[in-house]
Each structure stands twice: as structure tokens, then as C-alpha cells.
Image 1 (cartoon, rainbow, N blue to C red):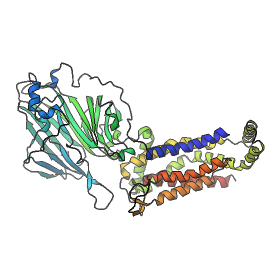
Image 2 (spheres, rainbow, N blue to C red):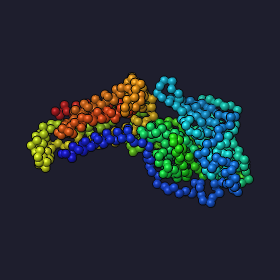
Image 3 (cartoon, rainbow, N blue to C red):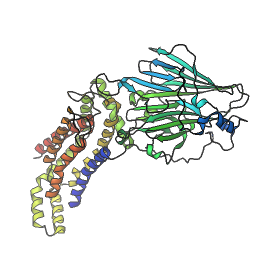
Image 4 (tube, rainbow, N blue to C red):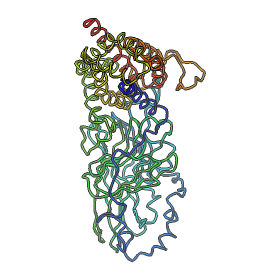
Length: 561
């Protein structure tokens, strides 16, 4: 009997520890699938020993280093852009983008459907951090074989600086010619109906020498160490059809990954910026981390380009929300960036169901309530079995207390009598625990889904709950409260949730051990403390689930009284 009680307590404590650990301590940045390939170069991916692919044939590397001092170290500060270089701006119904002639990089992209905060009048969400020294989708050659390319000022083949694309497509070409006659064209093609941006690299060899190197395209991002404790932030890519999320602190141990790359970029809790090859092919992803800036660089070996020839390499760029609805329609394995870890197989159906409910009733708070009811109905038979077993345990509790008192000095005899009591009244104490164990994966999947679903970002529910992705606060106090995430306020939803947990605990049968009984009664208080900083959407789910469980338990107790 003692072992069974300990198992029951261990199950509850496991839930508390998992939630508490994730909330207070864990850096939520993990490698979901560890790459097992070695760091040695694969055929077809640059860095081949003795290969002319790292430089222009017959070109003196020492001369290149002198002509291009920036190539000696990627960490050197680059010169400021020339004052006469332009920036091209383009707006679509989905986003607003700015691309500088200097390096032909994206220096700003704001999303029309998302804002920085839930406050009224908040600016549009910016996906290019000003903390990054360079823009997004900058490119170079891996072997640094073209002097000046790293800091090139391109020329835009248009007189206008600003475009408004309400429908259809628009292409903008950036061109630059090296001192050796090799022309690089970077062609962005925008569409009014999608976040995807076509990006073509056209290389024309006007020199008298063959050219062969590897093309590098870099996506930088900034890691918020506070935010990354709760949700993943960092390099994200699909390698050999597996999603990889690399902890920035692990980059020092391994910074290069080889294989078929579907996309490579940097993601945070809700958004991702990435480069997408037209078809997955052998390539490598190089990572670097210089706090707080992390970089993911896609490296693709180019074919030998003879004099007078040209070649085109086609990609797509994505800078936008990690929305299963959006990414699922694009292909390229992009939807894998919506990743809920171990519980992905359970969390995604829950997300799809929540979105389907929201399509009918456009309030995500209501959608969470209805989703909780649906899940409760699915597990209703298991819940009934559990509560019936708990009710049976409650009925024989007086007899158990008598046995404990009678044989308190003979543990072996006491356990034998207790087991006999179970057999006589056909009670199985484990039947009250097993349904909880079965439901734990569902809870953990919902925990991940409700915490990271972009649909809940700044989504209002009712009253003071204006953002289901943030902790609920009634009133805001201009004081700091220990262990409470700013802004300080009254966590009404969390307090009510704690009250329902206390009521549920009171309805459960006593363990018979006063020490254990007191510890179990402290659980609601501890869980309330843990949930203070949880998103309101997750607290709402737990509250509704508690109310449904109390109702079911009350019904079973009355029915089998």
C-alpha cells in the first residue's frame, strides 16, 4: 500500500516538476534530432582538398587578401555604406520590405498582420533586429575568391525607390561587377499574395578564367536569453528531412552540418527567417554565435563556370509567422518549423482542432474552452474509471484506518490485511492512477502547443485578458513583485484555477497518512505559484479542465454513493 501511495504522489510530483522546471530553469533550446553525420566534407560540397573551387584559377590568394582586407576575418567591422547608395522599399498586403544597395541585403521587414505588443498603436512587428551588424540574405563566396564582394554596393536597375504591390508580382534586380569582370545579379521577385520571396542569383563570368567556388547565404538573428528560457530561439533547419533546432550555446561544440537541406534560418517563439533552396540537395549549414547575434549560413557548391558562361541559382526566402496554416500551404518542409518537440504528434492535431473551432467561433479563448471539453469527452471513460476507483477507496477508508491502527507495529501484517480488504471489496487502487498517466502526454502536448502557437499571440479573450499568450493581470501595479513576471497585477484566472485545484483535492480520498495528506493539500498552492507567469491561454485550459473534472467526480460520487 505504501508503494502505491508513493506512486500516486510521484505522478503528481512529476507533473509539477516538469512544469516548474520548464518555467523556472530550463533553457528551452534543444536539438530535436541530433545529426549523426560526421564533420568531414561530403562530395559536392566545397572545401575539397586541392580543388580549384576555392579560388579563381591562376589567381594569387595573397593578392586577394591584400585587395580584400575584410576577407581575413569575418568578424572585422565592415565599412559603412556609401552615402549615395540607395534603399529600395516595397509594400505588399502582407509585409513591408527594405533592401539596401549596399550588399543587396534585407535591412527591414515588417508584418502588416502582427504588432510588437498587444497595446493599441503598437508598431508593426519588425523581423530584422537592429542589433545585427548586417542585414538578412547577404551572400558571399565561401572561398572569398572575389575581392570586394563581401562589401559590394550593388546597382538597382530602376529609378524608383518605392513600390506598392497590391496584386501580381514585381522583380527588382541588383547588379555588381567585380574587378575581374565577374558579374553578380541578385534578383528579388515579390508577390502580393504570399510571404515567399523568390531570390535568384545570376553569375556571369566575363573574366578570362574559369570560376568555381561555393555560394554562401547568411540569415542572422538575435537571441533574447530571457525569452529562450521558455521557448526555442536560434538556428533552425531541415536536414535530411529532420527538423534541427540548435541551442546557441552548443554551436561552439559543433558548427557545421552536412546533408540535404530543405531550408536554413533563425527562428524564435513565433517567427522564422530562412533561405529555401528550390529542391533539397547536398549542402551544408554553418552556424556562428557572437552574443546576442546568431547566424545560420547556407553553403552550396557551385558548378564550374567557364569564361563567357552564366549560371542561375534559384531560392526562396521566407520571413514571417510560424503558422501551420500559412507554412502548410507552401511546401518545402517549412511547416516542420512549427515544432512542439517530443509531443509534436499530439500537439499538432490539437492545434488544428483549435483553429477549426476558431474558424466557426472567432475567439481563441472560446476555442480553448471547447477544445478542452472535446478532449475531456474523449477521456471521459478513463476519468469515470479513475473517479469510481477513488470513490471506492473513500468508502473503505474507515476500515483501512482501523487496520492501520490495529497493526501499526506489524507492517507486514498490516499490508496483508489491507490487500485482503482490497480483494474483499474488489478495489484496485492503481485504477485511479493509470488514467492520469495516460492523460499526461496530452496535457504536456497542450502545454507546448498553447505556449508556442502564434495564433494565441496578442489574441484577446474577454475583459482584462487581452493577450492569451501573456500572463493574465487585472490592473497593473508600478511595483516589482518577487517571482511575478512584469507587469505586476492580480492574476485572477490563476487564483481561480488554484481554488478549483484545492476543491478537487478536498474531494479526493485521504491517503490515511497525515503527513502525506498535508503535502497533497499544499499542491494547489504550489501549482498556483508555478502558473502565475504562464500564458493566460494555458491557465484557461487548466481551469476549464479542473471544472470539468470536479463535475465528473461529483457526478460519480453521487452515482455510486
